[in-house]
Amino acid sequence: MSDWPHDPDGEEGSEGMRKYDMAIIAKKVDDEEDFPLERDEFVAEHGDDPIRINYETVVSMRDIFEYVEPAEFETITDMHKAVGAAMREGNFWEYHPTGVNPEKKHA
Image (cartoon, rainbow, N blue to C red):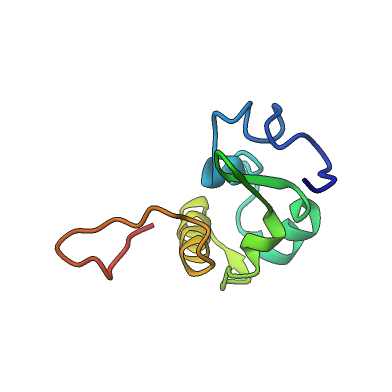
């Protein structure tokens, strides 16, 4: 395991493995006060933080944000959509929903 700035499964991380990926990232922002949010500033502040993807995988937030396209997020919803797309593009998620149109995956 890497030398993380804090325990990936502690209260600053995934709360003892109770929270994963998007939930951990969302805890790092205030949906009213932090937006609009600059991607690069956010990564500069939190890029080394561990993000638990599943019960066996932890990556840095920087790894996920390498795939995030927008340079700025107007709202937390915009951020969620961009991070979700990035996690699919970077193959961080093992689960991919299927349905009528399996190629179309909503964040």
